Image 1 (cartoon, helix red, strand yellow):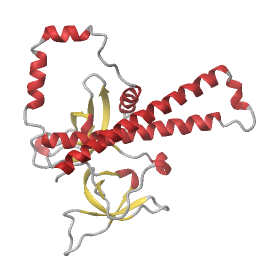
Image 2 (cartoon, one colour):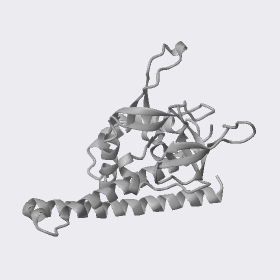
Image 3 (cartoon, helix red, strand yellow):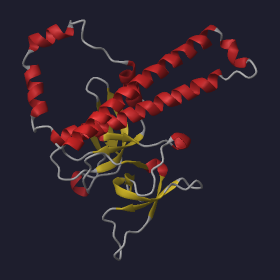
Image 4 (cartoon, one colour):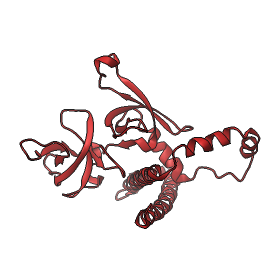
Length: 268
């Protein structure tokens, strides 16, 4: 790993710390608003009161901070996956599993850190993805290519931190033509922007590389933004890698809610 890579990871770690502190501040403000509304619910009926608008704004801010934290965490995990020695995680798991007495002592240790408000917020965000369509990396860890597809979230296990997802697209004939289920770590999941969040969804500028759903399919591929999203349709104009026709890359329109940030270390 080069010095610039390490510096980048350190900057991302600092950004995570900042986001978590901001989330805790926002959650404190939300709790204050809840207490105020519970104590004097009639306040919202007074002319000119903006309590509900302020509460909505705080929730929107908390959601955006949580999504930013998840995005940066995914980037850090991708960077760590790229440099971690093969088998390291499995060896550590085996050592932990083989030391039952230590595990028993740890369960009763009052000094074990508990979930911070930001971590709880992230867990709730993942749990609330149930029933939503998301982008998922379903390629095997030792696969040569990343395979990203649209899947539906069936369940999120807070203990194992794994998603159970369903690829609703029928498989090939040799696979029996059945829909496939996967269990994936959260680092292999990218939520799509919601249509209702158009105003708060960050915009990708021209020249930015992204991961987007190829028109007419349920698969996502690397693409480059040609034109920022159009306000009338909210579509991006994209050029997909390896989509050459007659010696040039055709420009394709993709809805903004089917375009996400390109994961670090992506390869296809």
